[in-house]
Length: 236
Image (tube, rainbow, N blue to C red; front, side, top):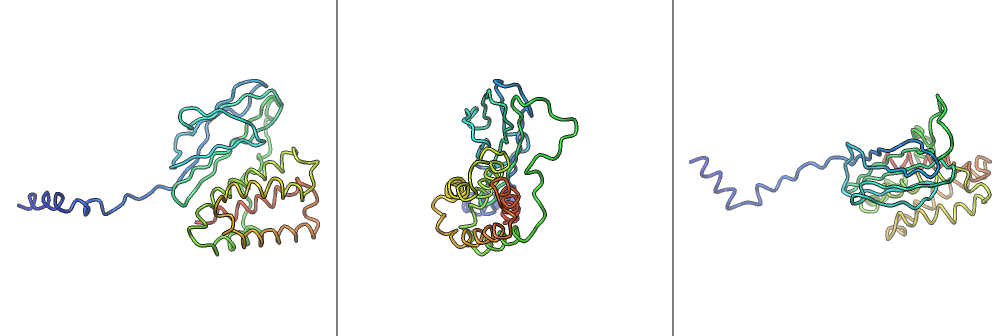
């Protein structure tokens, strides 16, 4: 009789059986691929084992066109230029995101036996700028904060660009307006206006770094951008 009642309950009230949603695993981004190759070689990078996410975004810095394969689970490109590329994968699940970076040396010679940590490496511990970024982000409504992983990826890209030396002939102002602002607006999309107070606070912080002489050229922006990333990654 107890078994029969259980079956009837499932038949009559099926919604009750589905009322408890399964817990959602946190997103995880993992990249698999070569670390170096000869100029002109086809380099293929895939979403690695252990990755989790509803959607994935691939980026290559410095900017390089690439082909997608297997429904977007892999990308590939070939270059004859001696360049060190940073491959970036962003995994997004709901309001959470995760970022993986993979460095690929294309035709730039063998990797030194004991190379220094590859920038941006582990992000720096909390500092005044990262604390500010975190505090300003947490002031935003949860729905507005949901695009924080995409903004994080934008700052990862711009930090890599600043560090690569590809824009050394630009002024800091040109880089901020023509690269950083454009990348940020792409990331925020329709939410850009809602992030206005955040943008103003962060801009003032960078202006203070400029006034204090800590930012003199485009390459000097890489460290502060890493701090922005560190602050954004604390947001949950």
